[in-house]
Amino acid sequence: MSDGFARKLLNWYDRYGRHDLPWHHDRNPYRVWVSEIMLQQTQVTTVIPYFQAFMERFPDVKALAEAPVDDVLSHWSGLGYYARARNLQKAARQVVELHGGEFPADQEQLEALPGIGRSTAAAILAQAYQQRAAILDGNVKRVLARYHAIPGWPGQTSVLNQLWKRAEEHTPHERIRDYTQAIMDLGAMVCSRSRPACENCPLQTGCEAYARGETSLYPGSKPRKAKPEKTTWMVILEDHHGRILLERRPPSGIWGGLWSLPELDPTYGPEELPEACEQAFGFNCSEPQLNSSFRHTFSHYHLHIQPARLTVTSPSGVCDNENRRWIHRDEALTLGLPAPIRTLLTSPEQTILI
Figure 1 (cartoon, one colour):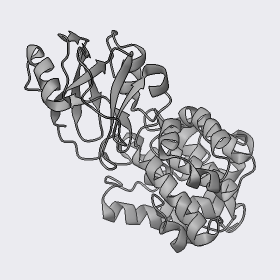
Figure 2 (cartoon, one colour):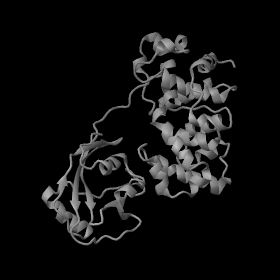
Figure 3 (cartoon, helix red, strand yellow):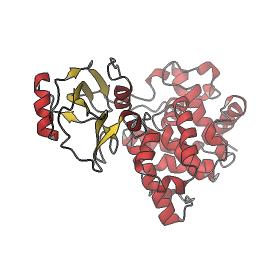
C-alpha cells in the first residue's frame, strides 16, 4: 500500500472507525445497496432504525421487488426524497428480471439500474464484492476538497472531475472495504461541515486547507438563490363513518406516489371552501375549522400549508379508486404518507413547525 493517505486513514479507522453499523452484518450487495441509498442526504443515526425495519420487512431483493408500492413507501415515510424509494423498487425488479436476483458485480451494469450512480455503484463493488472502486459521496468530497484545497462547488463538473481524479488516486488495492468505510467515517466524524476536529485528523499533516487555516472555505458552497414561496389549502375531509379522504400524488414530482390530503387553490377564502369542495368532490361540507398554518421546505421551494378540517354533510360523491380513497385514520397511518401529512393526521389541531 504505497499511498500514505490510505495507510494513515486505515490506521485511524482501525482505532476509531465505525465497525458495527447494521449494514456491516451479513454484508451482501442488497444490504449495502439499501444502506447507501438511505444514507444519501440522510445522517447515519436517522437511517439506522429505518434500515432495520426495512430489512425486517424486505429481507432480500425478491421481497422488495414483489412488495406493494404502498408498503415500500410506508417504510420510507419520514426519510424524504421519495424518488429514492421508488427507484429502489424499480431497481429491485430489474435485478430480479434481468439478473436472476443477483446484483451484477460490474460498474456499468450497476449504474444502469434506476437510482444507482457512479459512487453508489462503486460502494456496492467495494463493500460487497471487495473490488477496487473509488467512491465519492458527500463526506468524501469534503475530505478530498480540503486535503487538496480544491476550490469551487462540487456540483460543478470541473470541480467534480478533480475530486474524482483524487478519489481514484487515493483508493488502495488492499483493504478496499475498510478504506471506503474509513473515508466516509472520517468525513462524518472528524472532517465535518462546520468546526472540523482537525486536531484528531490522521491526515492533518498533508491537508492543504488546514495548513492555510482555510478549512471553512472547502468545499465551496453552492451558489445561493432565493427559494420561491408557494401556498396551498390542505383539507381534512371526514365523513359520517369517521373516514378521511386521501389522494395519491402523481408518480413523479414532490411526494411522488405517496398518499396525501386533497389540496385546493390558495386563492379561495375560508368561507368559500365548502363550495370548492362541492365542486371538486361532489358533496356538501360543514363550515371549515382552520388549523395553524405551517411551512414545509423542499429542496427548491417553500410551501406554506393552511390546513382546514371539514365534515361531510351529504353522501359522498367520490368513489374509491386507485388514486382516491376514503379511509379510517388508523389505517391511513399505515400507508406511505409525507411526514407533515402524518403529523397532521396524528395531531390535527396542533401547530406544526417544520
